[in-house]
Image (cartoon, rainbow, N blue to C red; front, side, top):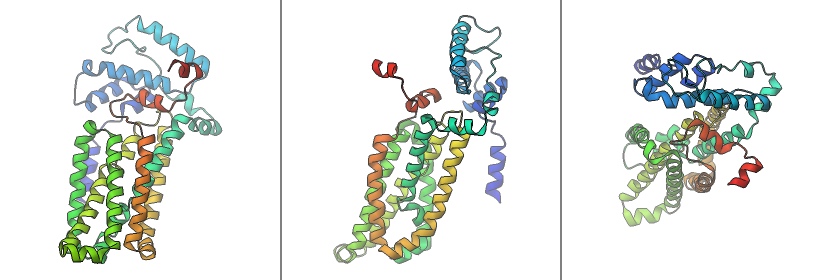
Amino acid sequence: MLFPTLAFLAISQIPETPMWLLSKNRMKEAEKALCWLRGWVSKEEVAEEFAQLVQYSKNSKYKSDDDKKKLQMDLISTAKQPCGGCTRPPIVPCDSNTGDDDYAKLKLHEKVKDLLRPEILKPMSIIIIVNFLYFTSGFPGFKTYMVLLFQRVHSPIDPNWASVFVSTSIILIHIAQMVAVKTIGKRWMTLISSFGAAVAGLAIGVHMSFQGFFDETFGDLSNWLLFTYFEILTLATVIGLGPVPWMLMSEIFPFRGRSFASGFCAAIYYAASFFAAKTYLSTLNLFGVAGTYYIFGTISALGLVYVYLYLPETEGLTLEEVEDIYRPKKRSEVKNL
């Protein structure tokens, strides 16, 4: 009970997100939350970022075309006159109504239609496919049945201690990933992850197909090689394919509709997790370890191509810039490119 208790105490100290507070028109609380999020800094230090969030929240409201034109005129006129007593740049009025009352009043079919926007459907499909690549990397099933699999492939150390070693490495690579993501970026981490999963999966398949040859050539070292492949598969998957989709959910969806889209992706994730765990042993029995990891390695290799072509880099971009990636461009905008 110690760890969930500590988690409860820690989470209780975290304020609501600035964007959610802005959607409820709680400006002062949102500004205070942003100061906390940036490391207990002063309002002046987050003034520019807060002004951008306010404008983004205002733009995220459900509006007709006439409302959008009026908003642009309001922003232009407001920018010329700073609000008295504000610490943030005069981008939006201090008393701007950034709530989501208009969206809440929509009928069900209007909300569903709003959620079918390309800005939501395109990133949703990317997250679902990357999650699919995670489950077909061969790691989730291996993690669930680690001891049984190590017994089957004759691990060079006790299967129970081998699972302890692998589980410890998962914790360490998660810490390394948190530190490195700002430098490497989520896109490159996912590319590295897909490449490592493909190489490790195919290496496991080759090793199991020609195990007699490897045993004769390398002796006791042969089992250590196989153990190393599983460790590489673990590290590669954990550094990108596993955590990156969860990071993207908080930034790749537009604010309007983010809760529904994130919830839908999470539901698909856990359904796929159940399916992967329930079918892993059956797949091993049907295709053998070699055949199973040939399949997993091939899917990871194809996934590497998909990630390279379709997964954008969001590190360092504002929420509005991320949303612009998936917003359909008008003909006039395309001509200017």
